[in-house]
Image 1 (cartoon, rainbow, N blue to C red):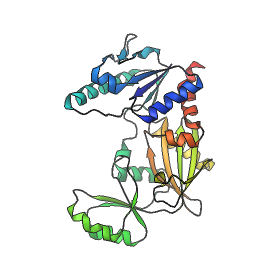
Image 2 (image 1 turned 90 degrees about the vertical axis):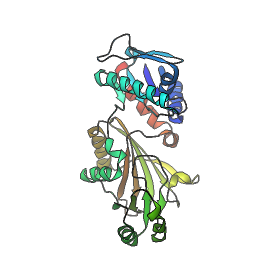
Image 3 (image 1 turned 135 degrees about the horizontal axis):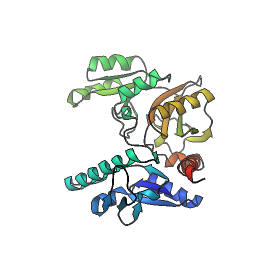
Image 4 (image 1 turned 180 degrees about the vertical axis):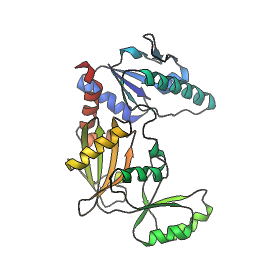
Length: 292
């Protein structure tokens, strides 16, 4: 039986649960937010057969053959935050001792939370990464922008829209509270590739918008990556301790793949619909492999 650990308000978790229903796969929902707010749990390290988490549904952890985790916190008060952290600390300790496939184990790929280090890691592993600069110096930023089309991006792994930036926008920099991350803009199509174990499922988008996700009319299609790139992504995903990752690329006119990011907790439901459920199918296959 698959465990789905997250919160029922997360559309990605709802999507995955729906795909499990359509596939006839038995699963249990560990609504971590519900449990943290008003539930109970027993978590041992090493694990005990009586370990459980209980919200509206009680789940015996020893019954699970695989666990898909998206621990997104949506609490509002310090007491809620404290219970949430206590639950996660216990669950993480239990997972560390469990002989169980977890997608993804806590602590994998911390570099994504700080983009400059993330870009350095990607480059060191043979991926083409656009030039970037993190600075609060208007002169350095202006010089970078003068070299060609540029976008501004979040420094952390928080989801945000990519926007164009020009030298005139730097007038507002003096009032900011921190540095700005700018990056060379690559013109071309966008590719999102999901690595699930040793499988790669990818889709490609053609759009005139800087951020194709805001373009409802973007052309989209399922594609196969070049074999060497696909193998590199599988290897690099595993090296980070991940079994599931979302890789973002820009593909220029020469068909060069420019790597923008490796997301360790991809919100994949939109892409799964483009890929006709292929990502969910691969996840289900991976998480139920021990049942075969």
